[in-house]
Image 1 (cartoon, rainbow, N blue to C red):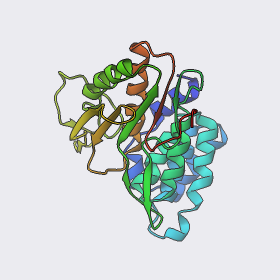
Image 2 (image 1 turned 60 degrees about the vertical axis):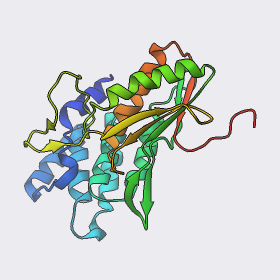
Image 3 (image 1 turned 30 degrees about the horizontal axis):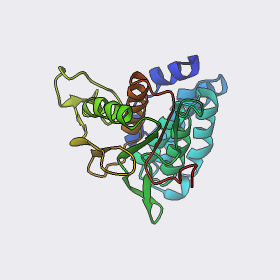
Image 4 (image 1 turned 180 degrees about the vertical axis):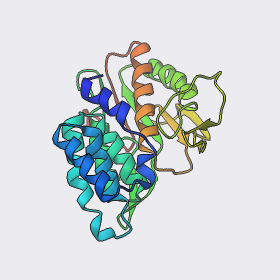
Length: 240
């Protein structure tokens, strides 16, 4: 993890995506931190604007989120997608695509930008497509990797944290509220390519999606697959 991403991991808090509001004094203080290169401060100001009751004021968030991404590195896009999702703002979709793209290694485990995509209805994020399909040169290894990932993703909370199978569930956040974990996960090996399907009640949870993608990629590498493509919607194969 780069220094910028480590800083974001320490300064960002998933609760900021819900109802972050700053008074004028705090806004000025945070702006000074941004001028000094603080990505977390830029993110917090962005959350403040994204959660305004007056929707005409919400577009002010974008410039601050862009600055957070510039200062914080690729992981920042995941947090920004999360913030917009909790603000019920359709810009969560484009930021999720940007975040997913940062996970891709074209020479190894590639990840299509549309993986675990957020779906919009009249501009609002209404649900997320919770399935990961894998195209590779070794179907048996891909199925084995997805099977290993299946058990792990059941222990991932909506804030992206993965918990061990022996740890107590449900998971609570810092305020004592129960965090969501997937209701069910299963591997389907009957289609053109194997896939991992999660029942997340159509919830929009970018940080959970981040960890799911990383777990699948980790298990594919552990299974000895040097190359694979992760995607959700059908992508024409090179042969086509």
